[in-house]
Image 1 (cartoon, one colour):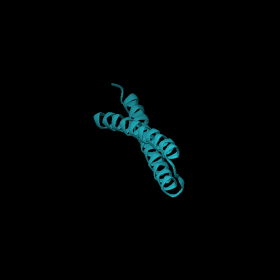
Image 2 (image 1 turned 120 degrees about the vertical axis):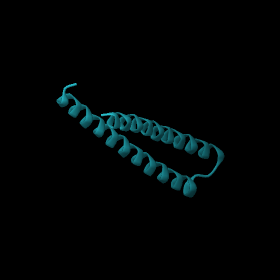
Image 3 (image 1 turned 90 degrees about the vertical axis):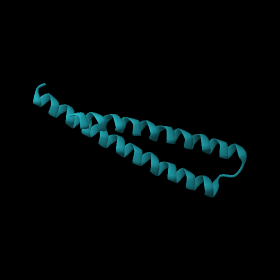
Image 4 (image 1 turned 60 degrees about the vertical axis):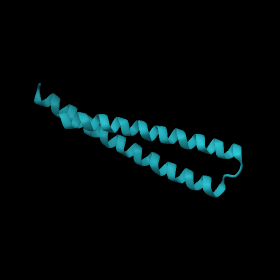
Amino acid sequence: CDTRLLTIEWELRYAQAGDSLEEIRQNLRLCDHMYTFKRNWIRGQSANTRAQNALSRIEIKAAMAAERYRGARAAVSSL
């Protein structure tokens, strides 16, 4: 392949990996904040269920970002 094309792809995959890592970090910080808020302020079954559902959605987003990072890292490694 053309070396210029490979360079562009490497830069894009590297940026994708960096963005995914930042998204993972952001979701983990949010998850930590939500757990702290839940522990300090949430009382009652329905409120705890609602908070747990919100935490589950955040954890799913972090897992998807981690999968996207693994794909980008594999692509960078193969280049």
